[in-house]
Image (tube, rainbow, N blue to C red):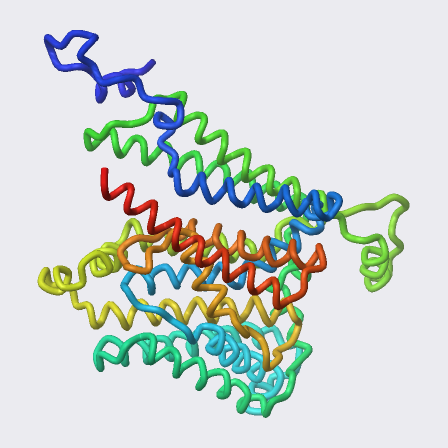
Length: 441
């Protein structure tokens, strides 16, 4: 064992071995988040139960692939909802704002840019200019709602409830109530099955992610040692690293196991004027939309943990009055948080409309409830001050697993919503009980 393992835990001079702190349990030495373990356990139970009920169809590579791309849109918005709820606000307009952003991007690439700038359909700049317009739309609307909440002190519930009604119908008027599509092929690549890395690049991406995760954990360990904090034993650190690396590579292996149907491969070869070799196979691999979610998760986690903005967000949520007295501009902070939420909604609009390959008027319906539920199930406290990005993403995955599993079993949609509502209430109750017990210690 190295010196870095023994020095922080060494007994003071003259202390007898019997006076040392009692030995810590295996789980305590790993220092794993018990709430995270609980959510992972709940997710595993959901998967196993539905896999049994569907005769093994739920945990097939194909269904896991579909589950991944179905989760992305809500999960991206849930990361922003963490900041909203942490600062003791709520945003009921995200589903409607998604529809407006989607409408703007659809009209930009199919009508406005071709008509105003003369860009032909299929032009390389169309999807990127459309996405930029959608991001600006989401950020501006989000900032405007934040201004109403922060500077005019209108309750966020009222502002965003009004936004729910306004932006849904703004999206309808932009498109005159029509379904707009098909969208640009490059744009569609962000939707899931139309844009994937393939097996080889997925393995490369997975290995790079594993290396980055290990280096990040080791860097955090070195940082703690440098500041004199106690660290886990090397073996415990290695176990945590092995779990993370195994999860990353296992996920890649499952997605790579989902092979592209032979008829699709044959069609692609024919389009290139070639003949598909006998026995040729290929895998979808990691979808671009999943990579986009990972990028959003990393950025949001860095903001939450490593930046002044993140510290201000959690400080304001913990005690708004104290935060304001300490010099934090809580009004401007509210504008920033809602602007971030609006930007993430626009990114989700890209994913959602690309997956459908068109814009429809009902896109994003009830997403506000799914997003809030994902954040709360993931451990974000409605009382403010507490929440994690990874918890919100896991909450979104649990939500989508419940809905997908019930759909595969044949449960009617009304009953599905009843189950999701029950799970949401139960999650809040469990959170309240957990915090009372922790606070009472």
